[in-house]
Image (cartoon, rainbow over all chains, first blue to last red; front, side, top):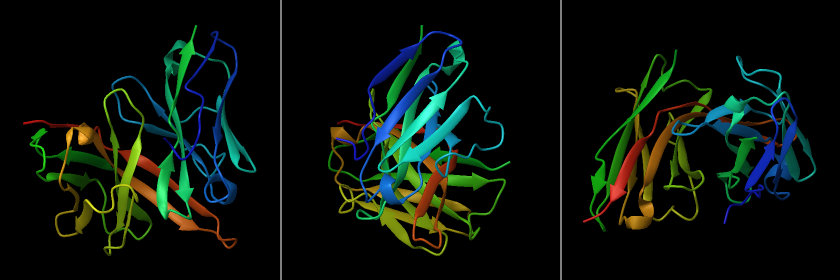
Length: 110
Length: 127
């Protein structure tokens, strides 16, 4: 059971927008910054979003992040078939003094 | 650019100790800005954070693994290592090493994210 809760799967059509939620508590998301990772099939995870809403160099602005209270959201616009992947949220848990991940969400672009 | 490469045995017997090394190239492991960590992914499952180390040796571990995990750093070789003792089949996974950024702002809010990952190495626990 993951500390952070994500929906197991989401789907949308090419060109559409999708959001992926990540729910936590005051000891993690509520008082710390959230990051998001994309894992394409058979590859290592890649950082998509850090500090709730910042994009590393090279990540297109189709990807966005937001946070409200103890939940965070990843948004992807202009969906492409190449966006099909597993997406994970992550943060620091102050009570555990440890990093934590969500269980992951599989995105299907129909 | 910075690259990380995991190495170690792909097969470990039950009850033995799993040992992996991550070699950092294209940058110094002694950078004061970063932590160095291990993450694993069992077959068909999600990511599990194992632990992280600062170049000076300070560590943080996943509470569920703390009694079996040791992460160490060798700045002279630009490497850091993972040891996981008393392994069982449940420890079978792809193991990733990664560079992490960690700190806190003036409000005490922590930021923590992993921006450079190795390609991962598969470790199977079986007799």
